[in-house]
Image 1 (cartoon, rainbow, N blue to C red):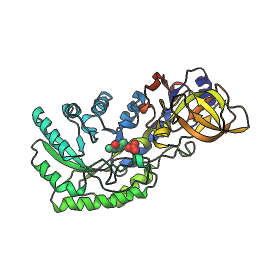
Image 2 (cartoon, helix red, strand yellow):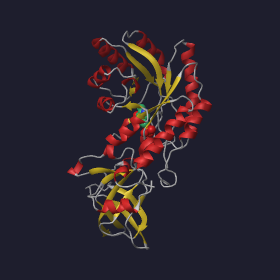
Image 3 (tube, rainbow, N blue to C red):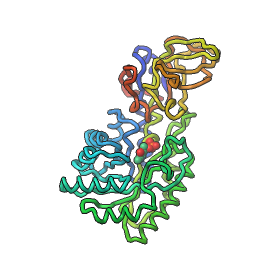
Image 4 (tube, rainbow, N blue to C red):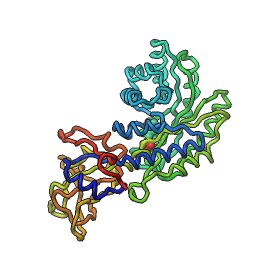
Amino acid sequence: MIITQEQIAHFKTLKTPFYFYDIQLLEKTLSFAQSEAKKYGYILHYAMKANVNDKVLASVQKHGFGADCVSGNEVQKAIDAGFPADEVVFAGVGKSDDEILTALSHDIFCFNCESVQEIEVINELAAQEGKTAKIAVRINPDVSANTHHHISTGLKENKFGVNMSEMDSVLEVIAASANIKLVGIHFHIGSQITDLSSYKNLCVRVNQIQEWFATRHVSLEFLNVGGGLGIDYYNPETNDIADFKEYFAIFNEFLKLQPGQKLHFELGRSMVAQCSSLITRVLYVKEGATVNFLILDAGMTELIRPMLYQAYHKINNLTATANEIETYDVVGPICESTDTFAKALELPKSKRKDIIEIKSAGAYGEVMASNYNLKTLHPAVYSDEVGVAV
Ligand SMILES: *Cc1c(COP(=O)(O)O)cnc(C)c1O
């Protein structure tokens, strides 16, 4: 995504900080993801937690994706946004009774279940409501995602999923649960996965697990291999669409489906991350004892990824006029030393009121913004409302 001069002129008239969405890039990304998935008949659910901005959701919905939800409110939001209930899945290690009831009331496609006790509770609530809940068991495959440890979810020490060693007892519980129907198995090994060999390892493991089920004569209508496809935070201008082609091709090559079995995916970040930047202004340039600080009007309250996962986001000064390069620690205004976007970053010499763009912020950005310090995040701005992005 490249911000145009016309857009910069518009930004100058607005209060900051705000998220800017490139709707054309979003649409291009969604179309590409959908067409690559369709090549193999794969079914793609959008992981809502990445971004629930209404305009983004409307685009996603229009492209014919299902929704992957991790809370009752997300399930409700998906239904309200027009996603068909039979394309909504509900995952998460800690589903509350109210959330389960919400999902049951809409007859969603499937609950991705993460423990024996959860299956028992869903069975009980489904019986009470006179329904049968379709479930997939989330299995912890013990496959490394080679990603940041905070966003790795498929290792045996992680809290997610059921280990294969427990699977016999899980099947016994399911067999004894009159209001539960097992329809699939589910995996999700982590996020921001750029080493695609992790997915090959997942396929090999899933093939073994499929054999385990086959020897027990348990048939599975579908497999769900989750999401996690990474994006290029370092070269967002030149590499603005994730490698969906290679990603789906790996599953096609290495995963063995049973006859008639469907393959589902749940992608979040790769569908929305590159289509948005956080736009902020320089409040002050401050000379520190050892470094100079560029103090912005946005901080961890608007974009917490750098503070939470040491995530890198490319930062541009959109209005710098100097040719000189200076080194800054780029920080927010929040009363926490961790409120730092980048350390020792080289930027064109910057001044008060310069407009700064923090790129690749469309996933886990606006949706994680908080009310801490009672900061104001101004309304999002959309490319199709302020001139056309390149
Ligand atoms: C977060 C999550 C996803 C999406 O992950 P991305 O890295 O954003 O693609 C998919 N499935 C489950 C169960 C998740 O928790």
